[in-house]
Image 1 (cartoon, rainbow, N blue to C red):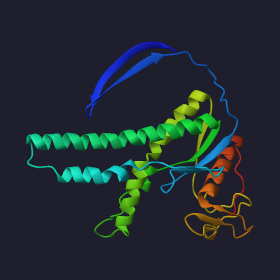
Image 2 (image 1 turned 135 degrees about the vertical axis):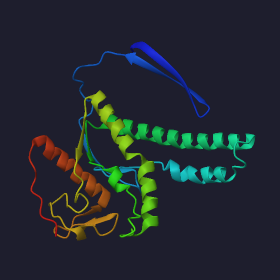
Image 3 (image 1 turned 30 degrees about the horizontal axis):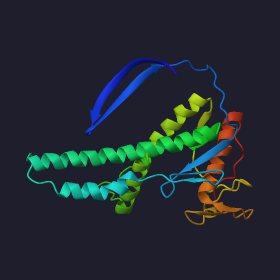
Image 4 (image 1 turned 120 degrees about the vertical axis):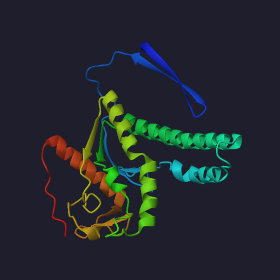
Length: 245
């Protein structure tokens, strides 16, 4: 257990919550109970796919609740009336519910992965760049703006950065490792022979190596390559990779 040092009582969107700050003794160098390693490929269709072929289904809270939120916003009547205030409070509660659903899902996923793997390899995500606006400028108009906006919503709602944060401190608690590696060409590189070619990626889901005929799910290939790069970082050596053609 531990010693309670302080507690904070708060109220958010009509719900009360209490948090405790505790002092506990921890081992200086904890040893992770597991010995396995795994790579993770983050996505939208699947929240993540690991190098063993396991897929983790995230929960797009924005997509699930946005219709209810939009409907509630349409019901707003005259500003500052009693009904208006009630409806605003309801909309706030819906937004809070979406955030709670996402946070709960991320904690369950990060805990399950951290419990079972001593080392986890993930890609260096740059969510800000990935979710940048596609509208462009007056001089250079963006392309497929509607599709890109939809992808932006999915990326942000998945909570990749928060998942990475949770996984990082949970690995530290357990004495494990979280290693971030560059993700370039991970979905085009064959994990069996090292051949790199854009045509290795047949579709979003299908990978077929032009050199050795190895076939696999593209997300699993990406996860395997990230795990290999994490091992390279630990060994201090870069494995030779064929140039992209």
